[in-house]
Amino acid sequence: MRSPIRLLLAAGLLVAGCGGDGDTRAAGTGTAADSREVRLQPAGAPGPHPFTASTARPAPGTPAAPPSRAEGGRGPRTVSGSAPGLYGGVPSAPSCDVERQVGLLTADDIKARAFAQAAGIGPDGIASWLRGLTPVVLRADTRVTGHGFRDGSAAPFQAVLQTGTAVLVDQYGAPRVRCACGNPLRSPVVTEGAAAEKGRRWPGYDPGRVVIVNPTQQVVHSLTIVNVLDNTWLERLTGSGPDRDRRPEVPPPYAPGERDLAAAPAPEEPREPQQPPKTPAPADCPTATSGARTVPPGCPTPPPPPPPPVLTSPDGTGDPGGPDQPADPYDQPADPGLPDGPGVPDGPDGPGVPDGPDGPGVPDGQGLPDDVGEPQDMPLEPELYEG
Image 1: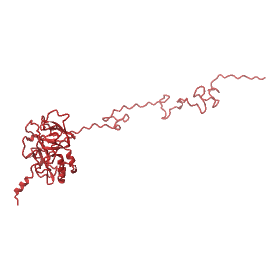
Image 2: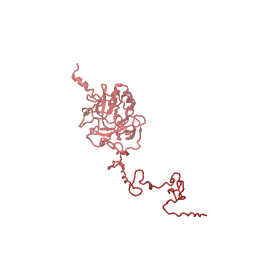
Image 3: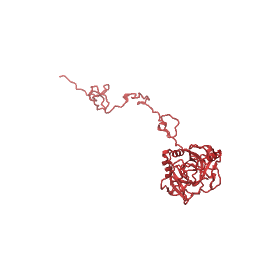
């Protein structure tokens, strides 16, 4: 029978290195208690509970961290995922063998499901997701949430990755895979107060200079990294395909290392974009006849209503008469194109002259006078004498 002391010692050997401390098993379920214990992970150490064997490629040089400007600090500090100099690399030499990483993860269905759950992706999309990540190396000690593979699932834990660690970052500039052990990475869980460190500190480690990568709000198509061979700027297109490096057309206005990432102020919280004022529809804007006293923003000021029409009768009496005809039909001018009566042509005296008493069909002025009541000069008929 084994003694209780030996059982406790055997259990303690299972909680060191790449896997996390504590007994949290489900991915993404880190608690406040977990965040108060931080595992220090050296750059090349895989540690226990890795998802896969190491796929990190040895780099010819070690990326130097930004120069220290002040000792100590409250840290960790937040740095944008697109900050120039946050990552480093060697031109045309990826720091991680992505294709090997794909093969190792997809060969085991249990590991693939656990990895996908911790990374927040579907199990069928592991290969395409990994190929869309960008291999780089860290240029500052970085706080993350790591995941170790234990008992068939992903166990989250808080960790600080050493400068020079090979990682795969996503299209928002955030570390997502640690290449030394294939463990998925997520954003850290940080609480107030100092965290209890697990593991041995490396030379140059300073808790006040640890950084937290803040994912960008917009997708980044390239990262401005540092060429660790000659300490110059290098633009690396996102993704893990070949020939992804080139010299930046517009490099940063300072040399690599001149600005301290850890001492830089934290970026402002993203603000919601201001919506432009809504332009009212034409139907919502008042018109000259609507009688509205207020005009909504965006509407033109309607012109004043026209004055009411002054209605007068044709004879000037002020009586407009009926709505469809004038007050006196005889005051309307006659149509010069129509005869005065049916079948009666206009007389020589002019249109509109009434017919004479000789009857219809007799032209005016050739029969009796128009007005028999007035004396007319009539020719005298000769008197007839008898005999």
